[in-house]
Length: 218
Ligand code: DX5
Ligand code: ZN
Image (tube, rainbow, N blue to C red):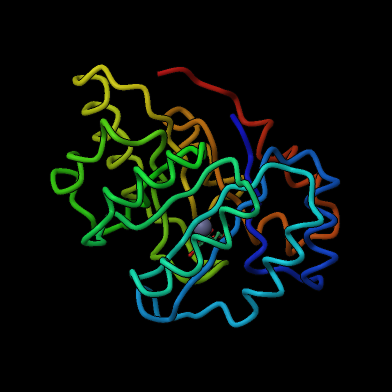
């Protein structure tokens, strides 16, 4: 189980938060960028974020919540940071084209699956992706409550993946804390946790709490 830490909601400054995540036992830094169109919220300090991210050493796990116009521009900046992986919305007209483009840059490509997205509408992407990012909250904000029906969705995705003998990995994003992680841990490879880690002083202590839950196998 890998832990990716989102810095969307933190009690420290951006610079300090990124430094604390970078020095922690987290496996990845999760980067949330929003355009105010695909989701209501807009990342106002994206150029500051992009420049601060040049200083970190941990692999970047990027999550773009954007329509085509902002995505087109942002993705070029993201490529310069050479991220480990990049998730885009499954709802774009050109999702498939972007997945190919991300792959061509030697970056793992994935689709973000929103709580209301029907799996049957997106399974056409399943043989084209390296991972799915399953949203366990409605995208836009940190610190929201974990949606209980996420487990059913994860089981559905796994059934489809196994039927087709595919290998993509599964990440779960939103509302992950000590008491909710047990609901997703058996079904995913990575969890993204934001406020549970970044609203505390001791990041490693919080990450250890996430890691200590028993690891059941499917
Ligand atoms: C929500 C973001 C998540 C969020 C996670 O739109 O994609 O990555 O920041 O934060 P918590 O763990 O606080 O829900
Ligand atoms: Zn995210």
